[in-house]
Image 1: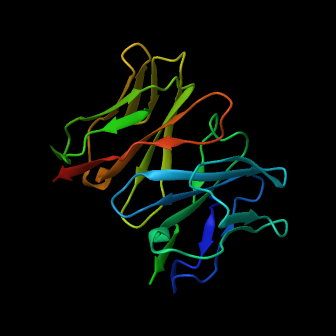
Image 2: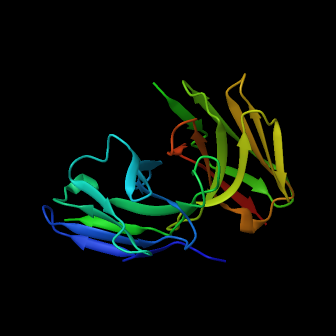
Length: 115
Length: 112
């Protein structure tokens, strides 16, 4: 069964550094998402992406965050100047059509640790 | 404020019994409600989706109900097995949005 893959599985970064999290969504999916989950907390929506542009973003997704689909397969989340509170699991997801009507398929996440 | 509430206490249940989980929400008018399973260190895995005009949905040993008057969804696992031990997440979606809003999840432990 096709799956969403994320790399790296664990990223350790110094505060203030830039980090790029990578995702390969399921190949025929059109909608892409990033969520994060702080340890022990709920999964929180960050951003959705469709047709090469952001379709929706949360209040968490401020100017330090950006997303890109640099080619036909990858979907990336960049955090420009990391803060301690950015430490979390970051999940990429994709769906065949608008995600609220369809299942969203999640990767196993990147654990981001900011020192 | 908008809230999605799931029981914070783990549900310990004997193998073979039915596990029932509750998802309550306030200040939402969800068009769709989804349930996911999450194992430690893994991403959520989709289980079931139910629409606002549907009362009940089943898939194998799983059943979901959706009561928009009570603002509640119930999630049942019948004939539970140790492999069903996981955290189960309720997620709401409203018309016009792409985001899923998740509850914190409810852990289920099936005791052999």
